[in-house]
Length: 397
Image (cartoon, rainbow, N blue to C red; front, side, top):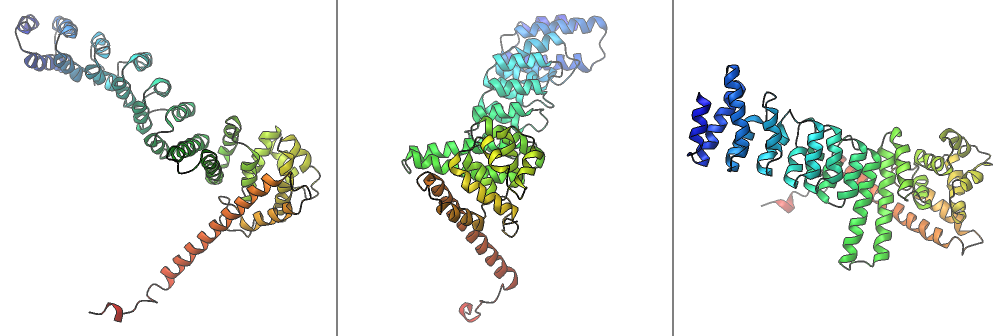
């Protein structure tokens, strides 16, 4: 028999020769028309090759058998438990491995093993969840970039919690079109924390100042995210903000002064544990009789009530309609209106922190408005008067 001669030859052949012959025998098993006896003998030889001392031979076996569903299952399982250079081939490609095999390999394997599994085509969500939970950073990055992998939202959140501080992971996640709004916001929060820690470590800013700037930048990005997200994603975004301790009075007031009424209403509904329709009706009731009760039930601080009351009155009067910038930026006229009214309050000491916040809002709104004005002015000059100031004589030879 050919197999008998092959086994005798293996005893004296070099590793490179054995690897080449092993690959040929594996291909013969998969694609040749063998008799039942020859097929059984060949399968036995392939199983025996799992014990070959040279990784070159076992890798050649893995390369030849990894892509076929006709490979001998005992050989595939044996190769999957081999050293990473060998196992990676079958773990990445073999259709014979079930979810339980892959999850076990993720849990017990080295980083190279985890990366190989993360590259699999049509990776099921159970395996993706295992990688998100225990995989190293490279494996999670490869998983995110695997367009065919099935990844549920909780697995994406777990990756953010573990590796959201890494720039490569954030960039890969943010380009995914299926990334939920809560996960995007969690990435923004991670980025703000990372930047605050960086500037503090460099002694560019003191820790308190850096944390405040990072917090305000995160809240600004959160309002923008809510403004550009579908309305169906706002409730889970607000729930995420509350669970993570970010749904505070400053963020809710920023949303209102940006004209993001949907986010404001959803935030009050979440905090007050009331239906959104009921909250919306109370907010738009011109009599204003129910807003104070809604505000108190939401648990927002009494010191900021005057700002919310004035902003809600402006909303009812249509004060946001004429302001540019959509619902992604603070409205300067509305912020100044609220600031002026709050500054007239008698109990100035109680609302001093609120006045400081509103002054920062006013400065931010003024800068945004100036930036928009200058951009529009430059765009107008470029489009309508591109050659008005061109002087031929200045460029003459």
